[in-house]
Image (cartoon, rainbow, N blue to C red; front, side, top):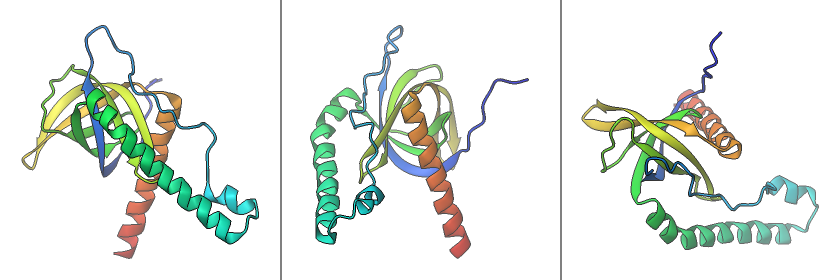
Length: 173
């Protein structure tokens, strides 16, 4: 019986940041500081607030997310200097493109921007396992070696949302 898990993989185009890990120092630098309580417009609607107040609170939440993301951008760019574009993702790893080249065996920490508004990010430690050239594009394949449960759940939810979106789009095209 195999202990390997299989995860759904989906094509996508999301941005991320990456940093090389120093051998022997495989500690995550990124820590998501968002609260563990999940906010949803449905919960607000169930509170039976007056409609203008509900709209105001939802607008305020969106604006705060935007301001917090702008405030943290500079620190993120310093800590994670490499820009990447993720072209395929699963809960086990991802495939990305970058101007910077990585060799198989290179250990890295990656931070993914799964959603801009509300801001949803996830991070993982991983290892570049191979580099492949497809259609003149250099894709680097990263296998996750350590992912917090909360981040893995966010990635899994993102993959399912992308799959549903792509199925709907194919159905109506």
